[in-house]
Image: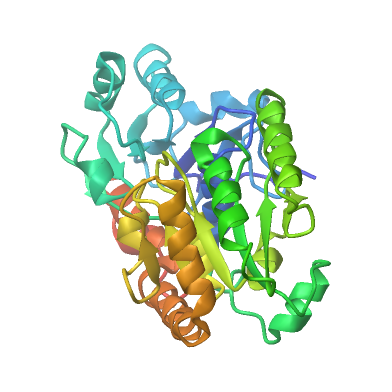
Length: 364
């Protein structure tokens, strides 16, 4: 059942103009409930969002012509080109009073069209220092945070493994995310075929979904695993909404991506007390503390990944030390409430409001 919206108190609109699940969608789903918990009047708009989120019904869009009770403009927080364009359309053609904020996670040279859109935003946010380097306008770096209550270490690792149907007498290395070449699923599978061969006490799992366009890719990987005699050692476990339970079953996590905008999986893993090996893409080098919470790989070579993983698998004490450091690192530097507060500061600045009006300290 849709939750009612008080348009007098609605300050921020978070559009999601993409039906398919993505990292951007996941960010919106995680942030909005916490932002509302601080007292911020925020609602989502668009498709592909769970019914638990407060969303603006299509029939009520005309109410956006009326300003909130404080008389100041609302904020349209875009995260995609289509959303920036929609915000410009509403502000300049429909004359809806809006301030436009854009969050960029891209780490590549923007097209002329994207640059044109970005220059027309009232505020721009970069999700990492790497991303900021590709922007040609003033911006604020706000890195994503993690819900450290949802993503937390298990009280009993063996029980955490059996709870998701995995053997409690095995150590487990995991790779989570959509199954496709961009995500490096094949690098992980090939590295595990090599690393697991002489380590019978370890198994590997791949959690995630292959969309229709990538199902042949997954079939080829499964054939490769079968041919290597690793059917019972490297498991595809599918996509899960309770992914935190699968992180809790792990002893090591690998983020093998070839390209990534930001990449939440290392944060989720470390929050669950699981050290990380990651490629040097996205924000990974800004998330993982080299030698303390895991390792950043120097290249995308499969054997480099296999060697690094094998070394970590052989060093139980090192993994245990990194596991504790990972959890401390997440709770200290990446709690999602930090992201919520920093976003409120941008919203306040761009709309000439006081931060205290948008973020109630200690309420999230």
